[in-house]
Length: 279
View 1 (cartoon, one colour):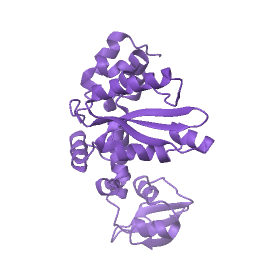
View 2: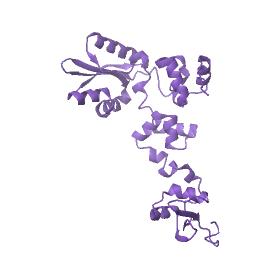
View 3: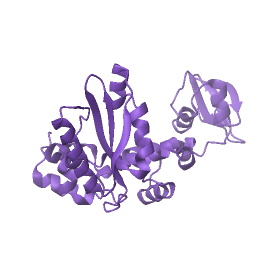
């Protein structure tokens, strides 16, 4: 069955969510196809509550280089995001400035053309500069819409402090890294950049079934597929190291009586019980 999105259905569904990042993939795609970059103007409740739209910490910057003609790139960001923004234009292989620099073996110069702006003022200024540069006949590398036609763009980063991330994780009951990535990508990127992931989500928690498993420190018995005893291990970790079978698969085998791994069967060893009683 094919679902056709009507305007009424889109509005009904969009009003169920508090943030743009919380929208399901299908709904977000349908909204962008219908409203484009005016989406946040039509549904202002989806705007991020972490951005102060009146704060005067926004700026507009310009990259320029002369290569038979003037080539430039105009962008906007915040004071707090300036350093990662410059890093992206220097190191990201998919960035327009980086691509042009490598293809033509040139180095761009950077300068801030306006600062101390609100979000809306920075959009207007970015539009003015892009239109002015284009009218002068310069080559403008910007492909995506800028200014009033753009999304939050570079303003979205730099706002996720550790305390805010922890609060978000608790409020939304985030249980793992992948769930955070799908629920709030900017928050996940902040965790990844600042190396908070291991602290907030220890590696063993990436396997939720291991957390629910009571076998983590219990002795494990290894049999062949015919039920013949092979070895007894102190824990799943020791069994994993000795057999080369992933610990998460061993845990699944302990739960699934018919699960055979690499020709082996693993069972929980219980004291005073026959080793073969569970086969």
